Length: 337
Image (cartoon, rainbow, N blue to C red; front, top):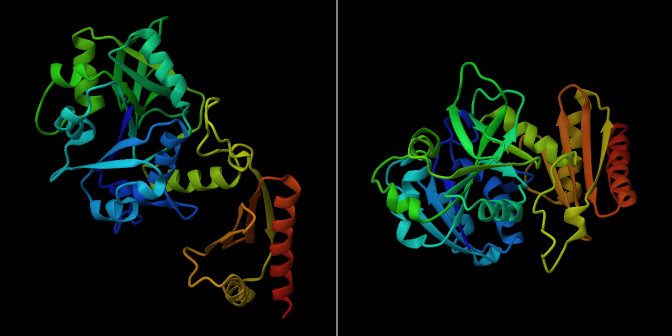
């Protein structure tokens, strides 16, 4: 099976993070959002990946190349001008002759892809849309289904609404739709294709997930995603039961959070000692990431009002605690110098 990742958006709402890189290249714990998506696909055995690109496409291509380093095969669908969420896919219909998955490049998620595929085939759907309940659906498309989970109505970015089940931008698509609705130029799933499918009574079904999903559309959501990962609320690269290799450190991470008070006058010295101790050239946004030789990591965040916040992850709870406490003691010691 092939998958398409939509990575051509400019990400104006996510500025200043997207001034120099494509939106899906914005990092979370030193790893681009797009890398989490590629790892998710690979963990479910999907290795043939098409990526639509436009804005700052060079930042994506230079990092991922042909995908070999990430154990996948990447084909780039370059758009000279933005073609919406579906326009680039229609141009590549000759490469998509079997049912394929579509994933938004700015989605931070561990959606169970195997369950989506099984649902799609069981319903004999022309297209399956993955939904998720959110507190405020005003920035999304709201889905309405019948008892069989068939989509009967869809309202994009409503000013008033009933229900809060929204479109996540993850789809399973049958290739015949690319011929039936063939069109050149800009085309959007939510504004163009889904309404057309409903109008023509094509079989569109909705798979509702309880998995983690966050749309990294603005700085607020971006910061929440980083916090979710550090607090263990999001488990990346979740492998299905048929996966040959299961990394227990990934599936069952233990994250310890430690807060250490520090006077503002002492912070510059403590930051300098931290940089010196781990031999790194710089500290971005006053956040320092330390990867451990035996697996796991420690992230130290300089908080303006609360000193330092330390997050440590390891495959054993005791080890995570030891790592966090170790750096906490270091910070307390350096304050006394």
